[in-house]
Each structure stands twice: as C-alpha cells, then as structure tokens.
Length: 214
View 1 (cartoon, rainbow, N blue to C red):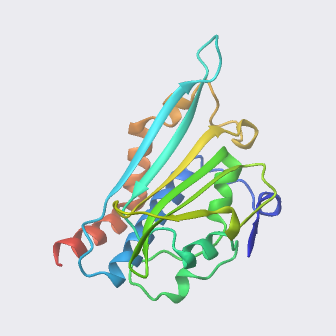
View 2 (cartoon, one colour):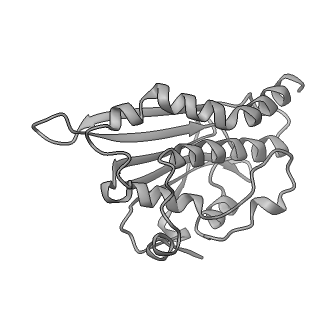
C-alpha cells in the first residue's frame, strides 16, 4: 500500500478552513483513544496536548513560521493504523463499530501536505505485548509514502503515546488567509482553542462521561 501524496494533493482540494489541520489532529487523537479504550479496560483517561511553536522565518522584519505538535495517549501506529494512513480512501475506522468514533473519509491527512512543508510522526504502542516505537518524517513534496517508510524498533520501557508534528507553512496553499505576517494572530492559542472547543464540544463531553463512568 502507498499513499500517493502528489496525486492526493492534486485531486483533493485545499480546504478553505485554515483550522482544518487542528481539526484533523484532534479528531484522530480522539479516535485513536477510543480504539485503545475498546481493547483495554484499564486505559487511563483521555489525554491530548497541542503545542504551537512560533519561530522567526527571516533575519529581518516580523515574519514568523510555526511548528504544531499534537500528542495523545491513543492506541498508536500499529500495523492496522499504518495501513490506514497510507490508504487514501481507507474504510478502516468504519468497520471497527466503536461508539463515538469519527467517520473515515481518508482525505483529511492530505490537508497536512497542503498546509505544511514537513510532517513527522513518533508513536509508542504495544504489539503482541511488546512495546515498540514507530517513526516517520517526510517533506510535503514527497511523491508517495509506503508502509516501509515507517521505521520501527523495540523499546524496553515507555508510555503509550503518539505525537504528530507539522512544521513550516506552505504559504501558496493558504488561500491568502494565513501568512508569515499574521500567523501569530490567526493561529494564536486563544483562536485555536476557541475553534476546537466549539467544534468538538459534543465529542469531548461524550469522552468525559465515558471516563467518569468506568
């Protein structure tokens, strides 16, 4: 299986919602936690952390760029999740029959490549009782991504977690909404929190209730 990144960018329109990557990150984090919770009755409460790191993009002026990272304690990038990641029209989530999980459209991750120059994944997960780590780091102009592009190795200890990082705006893709001059305003912690709170309020309430009744 391979994810045709260039074909996906060509055939999947750039979302006009410049918060789409945040929406995709949080939605995937929630889904991953629900997958873990479905198979592990002792799973801890849901955890997700979004970090926004602004850094100067030039030696002069007030231009800035950004790195976004999203860490969660979901199931991680096991073999099934990797296969789903490299399959654009994957229906993987649809067959899990887990209450509260999002519909699998398969195109959301293409927005990562539309909006950002570099995508990195680092995931710690259990596979048949063995703790493993899987990593991926690619540029958005990569032609395609296959399962073999993920590195994998055993760990002696560590916490189950996944961090997805997006670095460097692909300016031409932002449809004039976000640029290096206004990025600290458009992607401020307050603006991102407000958008995600309103968008995901119902899903977060369901998660909170599920955790409190265990």
